[in-house]
Length: 304
Image (cartoon, rainbow, N blue to C red; front, top):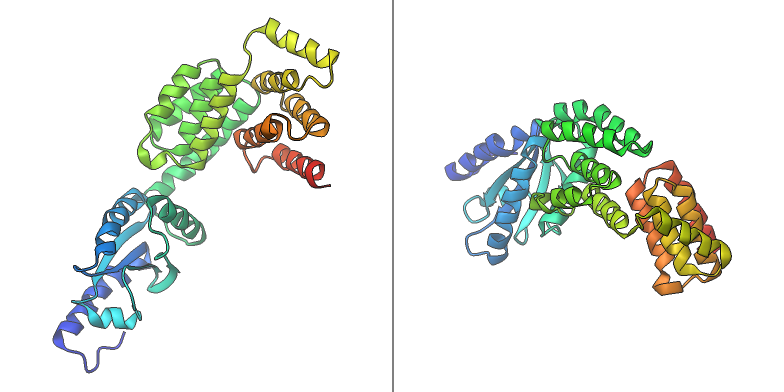
């Protein structure tokens, strides 16, 4: 950034910018906020930026602010025409315009996307590397149907990382699958606000809702199966049976009951079968091969 012909105040501002933005951006992602005292929207956005920056500090994110009235040379260099203007800076270069993101959730989504693409190592990175294989083990045990053992694995991980969304999700899903729905519900009810919209937590809530809706009594499940076999068009029996089979870990059996409803009467009960299938996909995990295969089957059925 050239300083020739600038006033002493401008040169000082540029030096401060190098110190507070450019140098930290060599190893961190800097959220650069252009603002002014008279700007109402700026003042509304400030607490949101401060909170998100604090929440993402352990992932290598920090916040820097530029008052456009006091540091005109910096604002001019970045061609700031209106405020608030918010950029993401890495290694001295603009990597994203964050200005359209005005809510905490919007900023989190954008930052998550950026951080996946940049070689930024915050304090959380070593912990992530340590947790990853343990999380995979917990998910594998849970998928195999051993809910109690999975709950034990996730409970140990919870002691290591109490606010990690994947850990909390795994623990809640394992508790629900093991018949401890009340404990799972209590765990999810006590989550920090910043985790409320995390996809992993959404997956856990969906799993809990399905578990609570599923018939638990063996005789009731047998009766549902008998009803479905006696009357192929008893959609309610098939729907309830799907819930029972999913709760028991029989994904394919549950899906087949719902596919039978869609094939027989697609719009039954306000499209309940398709909606329940999408819930199952969320619970299992959208990247799971089983989900991918069943999604293709659903698409072929609906649009083929």
